[in-house]
View 1 (cartoon, rainbow over the protein chains, first blue to last red):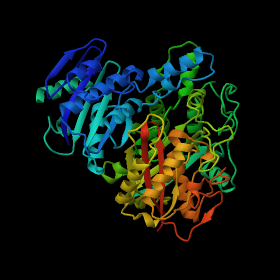
View 2: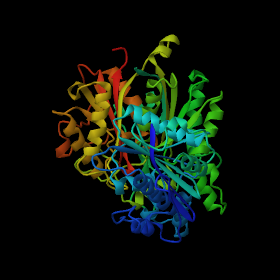
View 3: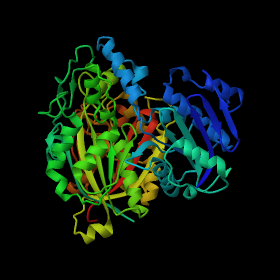
View 4: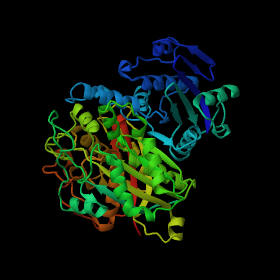
Length: 206
Length: 376
C-alpha cells in the first residue's frame, strides 16, 4: 500500500504534502481551493455543510489533487475515523428541535447526524463508488485507519482508498493505492499520536 | 478461507431471543405498535417497533438495556480473546437528549466510542474493539469487515455486536424527512408510504473453520462473500437505478464464487419507502435473470437501522436451515414490480444452499452478504 497524496486542513491553514502547499486561510477555504485549481467544479450544497464536513471535504479535495489521481473509471473507497464522531451535529440537531417546540426536526441538520455524513458529501461530489464507512478503534487511531485501508485494498477490487482522520481542529486525508508510486509505503508509518504528526512524518519523507 | 457464524442471538421488539423474532415473523405478526415512549402528536406517524419493559431517559440508555438483556443470556459463550466490532448509527443518543433537556453540555457519554468501551468492559478480557458505522448498513459492513479480518488471518474469531434504539432524536429526524408510514411499513406493497422505526440489539460470533472445529462449535452457516459500494448520488435518497447496489451484490457473489442462479432467496433491505424498495428491485433484476424469492422483515421488526444487517443475517441463516423463505409481514398487495419476487406467505424451497442479504442507507451506502447454509 502506497500513500499517493495527502491533504490537511486545520482551523486556520491547509496544505498538501507532495505539492508542498502550506497556506493560511480565513473564511472561505473552498473558494481558495477553487482559485488554486484544487476544486474544478462548483460544490453543490457547500453552504449547507456543517464545519466538520467542510473541513473533511476540503482535506479530501487536497489529497486527491495532491495525488494527481484521475477519478475517471476508478473505484475509490472512503473511510473515516476520529474521536469527535458527529457529536456537534447531534447537539445542533436536537437543540434546534427542542428549542423550536419539538414539533419538527430540521432535515438539513438531521442529515449530518451520522459519523459517515462528511464522507457521504465527499463521495457525492467526487463520485466515489467504493465502500464507505466510519471506523474507530479503542486506541492507535492512525495505525488502525491505515490497517483498515490496507485490508480493503487487499480484499476488494479497488484502485484506491481515501482515508480521513477527522478531529475537532485538524483533518487529514490520505489517498492510498495498492501499488505504484507514492510518498511512502503504509507499513513504513510508525504509530503516531495525531494527524499533525502524521502529516509532519509524510512531509519529511517527501 | 470460510468464515463461520458459530453463535448469535437477538433482542427485538418481539422480545428476547432469536426464536421470539423468528416465530413472530413466521406467524406474520408485526411488532409495530402505538409508540408511548415520547409524544408523537406533532408527527405524521405514531407507531414504532419497541421493546417492552425498557425505561427511557431514566438511567441507562435504551441501547445499553438491550445489550444487557442480550449479553446476560449469552456472554459465557463468547471467548475472552475475541475482538469486538460494534455496529451502530446513533448508539446511546438518548443520553444526549437527556443532557440537552437538562441543559448539561454532556457529549462524551453518547459517543459510540463510549458505548464500545463499556461493552468491552462488560465482556471482560483484554479484547480489542472497533466501532463500525455505515448508516443503516452498519452491521452488514461490520460482518464484512469481521469476515475480512478472519480471511486475511488477522484473527480467528470476531464478535460483531449491533444495536440501535428508537429515540425522539431519530424518530423526529425520520419524520422531518417524511419517511414514516402512518399505517406501518409495508415493504414492496403497492400502497407503501414509508418505514416504521424499530430497535434491536444482536450479536454474531464469527470464527475460522479451523478454530470452530477445534472448539467443536456448531455452525449456523457461513459468510461466503461480501461486497460494498456507494451510490455517490444523494445524502438520504437511493439512486434510482439500483446500479450501485447491483455492483455490491455482484462483488459479493464473485467473492463467494457463486453464480446468481444458485441463490435461492434474498433478504432485502425492504424499508417500505417507495424509492428504496423500487431501487432494490431494479438492482435484483440487474443481477438475477429470473425472479428470486425475496423477503423483508421490516414490516414486523421495524427498521432497526444499524442493527438491521445483523438481525437479517441471523434470520436468513435460520430460514436456510428451515428451508423456506420468510413471509414479508404487512405486505398486502405486492407492487407490480415486486410480483413474483415478494410474498406475504412463506415460500418452501427445495434447496437453499445460498442466500443473499442486502442493506442500504443514508449517504448512498450499500452492502451485500452471500450466506451459505450450515452443514452443506
